Length: 75
View (cartoon, rainbow, N blue to C red):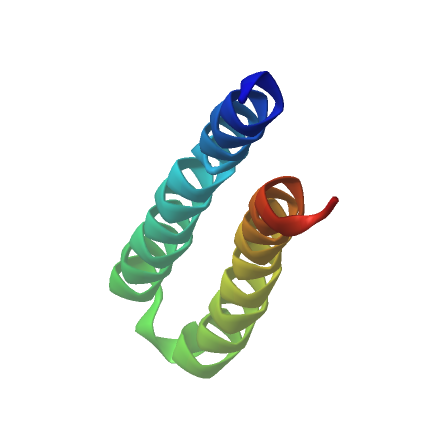
């Protein structure tokens, strides 16, 4: 019983990283909009960098989710 409670608490704490990833994705696209509004001629290059930033930030979220599932369902 105590082990199951500890697993649930640990998984809940591991999902805090998902909120941080959401904030990070918001910052990436906010910077994209700001950059395009300042210099529209760099739109294509800025978009490529934003997609790369989105992918890396989303990878961190997937790692946090994987840790949460490992805590819940492993052993």
